[in-house]
Image (cartoon, rainbow, N blue to C red; front, top):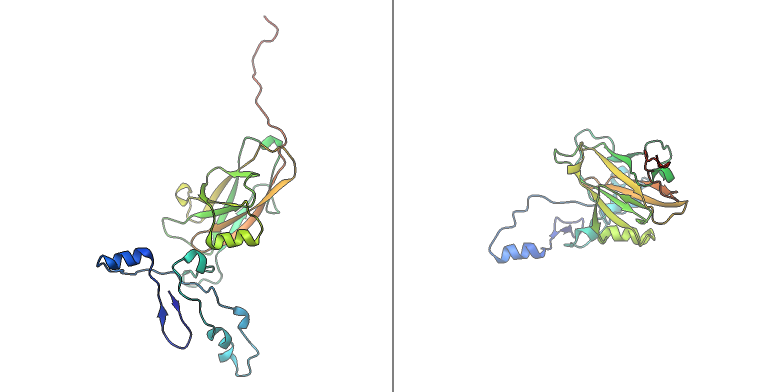
Length: 242
């Protein structure tokens, strides 16, 4: 669904296959929710030097033609609008906490092979409902690090694929950290473990975290310096043949 232009209240709506099926069977759509987006709005057209005064600062934006309606939200809604609590003074943000790190980098050394390290993501400025939401993680190079408590989403497409293509990270994969596995509606724990197959220092990748409801995101770096595996030695064996 999309507004054709800014001069009249005309709405262009497209039905999905499911919607057409419901109408074909004599049902009613009963639309109760919707998602709004400002994709296609060029905010650089806001002109504080307009000769007619402040009432016309946004004239260029208001006269923009909007995008045609599309049934594929993953392609057309790049920037989705969200409803925030009253008196909100800033947009939601995602804060990343990495134990022992001050530069948003988690480094794995040899003594951490075979174990995992917990990274925490905190959502600030927004309180989801009791069910909470999910967190998505995009790993640029998934052969460097694993997320133990995430579910692979599969191949990325739509807006997510545009990000992968523009960032030139064709091997990237996306994972979902389910909210049901967490203890808080505004925090997630990401369990990272280093890959131990390619034993070479200095391998690194970026991980982008995206909160599902607000679109708040942040990223951090993982460096994998694991070059050898540590195995526990058997203890208490008498080697003297006594």
